[in-house]
Image (cartoon, rainbow, N blue to C red):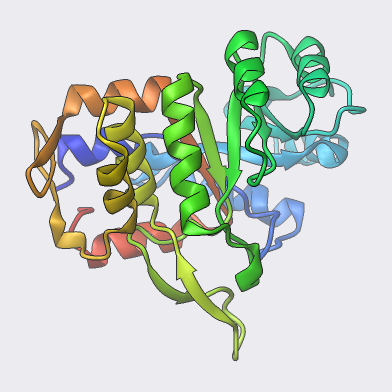
Length: 282
């Protein structure tokens, strides 16, 4: 049985990014997959459909060809500063890269009132970027991996990102490299001979974020993110415990609503299979 605390932690958490590597599916296949995932018992974990803006017209055509109403497919649109609002889509969030406050302001003005998540340069230590996000009500985005070992940010970088976002009270979403629940070494693609690397676990990321949001000391946030034993996360109906630290289900709901919003994954099957293997998903 899926506990209430796990349900709260992962509700609508996985933005389906089937168009992106390593899956890199064609648009019709990715759309069919998303529509199928909307009908499975685990659909409560499914978030939006991650769509590059340059494919918006083709996506609208694909919706029409399958008789799908745009309102039935929430979209997180990946844009550049030059992109404009496409017609006929149900856009629930916008994602963009920016490394200057002026660009962030330009993006917010163009896309408001839709929630904007800005992918920050992970090595940029300037507080002005966080201050700008906070001022404008925008969110941050972190890239947590990729299909090559050097695409993964340093562990310390991810820790710093989560702690700084919590300190600034800036919501965030993550993308790439979060296919598995618990931190461990995995192959980065399904190809024979694929390189292997330590991948951040999505349970680690969400729990570290939720604990940070509710005031956990930074050194313990780091330990939560580094945890490699799934059994040390104890999910119950009333909350979750990690060693002597705990969060109520209500605290988890608050952190998800106000802080750690979602993460992109090119697979919706792999995360659920892993959760079942751990005995966490019914």
